[in-house]
Length: 193
Image 1 (cartoon, helix red, strand yellow):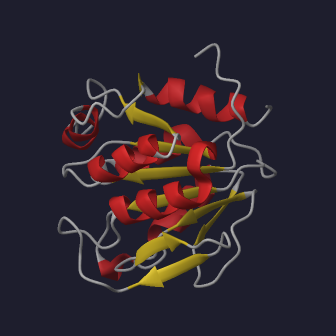
Image 2 (tube, one colour; image 1 turned 90 degrees about the vertical axis):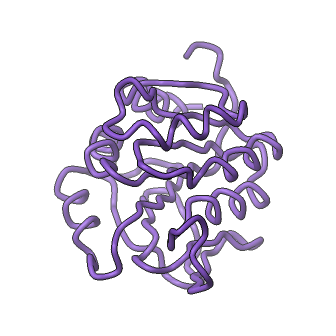
Image 3 (cartoon, one colour; image 1 turned 30 degrees about the horizontal axis):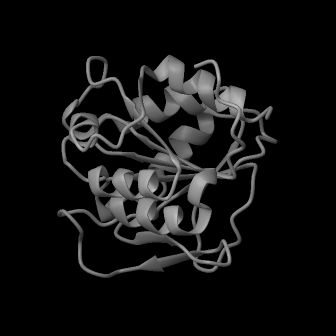
C-alpha cells in the first residue's frame, strides 16, 4: 500500500450480498470528521427502508445517511443510495435520484453511481467493489479507471460472495485487489494526505 500519495475527493463503494459485514469491516473505525465523502450502493429490496443505515450507524462513528435529492456532497458522511433508486452524482457535486429502469437487474445500480462519479471527480475518485453475487460494478469500475481514478476490488478469496469482485477484476481495470483490512487501512491513510 506504500506509495499512494494521491489526494482523493470522493470514494464510491459498491456491494451486494454480504455487503453489511464488509461495509462494517471497513467503515467502523473512521472518525466522525472523516474528510472524504463516501458514497455507497448496496443492493437491497425496496422494502428495507432505513435498516441498513441504522445497523451501520450503530457500528460506526462517521455519520451514515441515505442520500437525498439535490443534497450537496460533503466530507463527514457515508451516503447510501435509497432502496429502489439509482444514485447519480451531478456536475455541481450534488446527488440526484432516479427511478429509471434497473441496470443489470439492479436499482440502485453500482454502475450508475460509479460512472456519474467518475465523470465528476475524475482522478480524485477511488472506486471500491466488495462482495456480491452479480456483475454490477464491472462496467463502472472500467469508467473510473478511464477517467484516471483509483480502482480497488475486495480479494475474492475472502469475499462472502466472490462473483462481484471477480467480475470487476476480469475487466483488467482493477488496480488493487485487497482484503477488507487492507481497504480499511487505505481509507485511513488517504484521509491524512
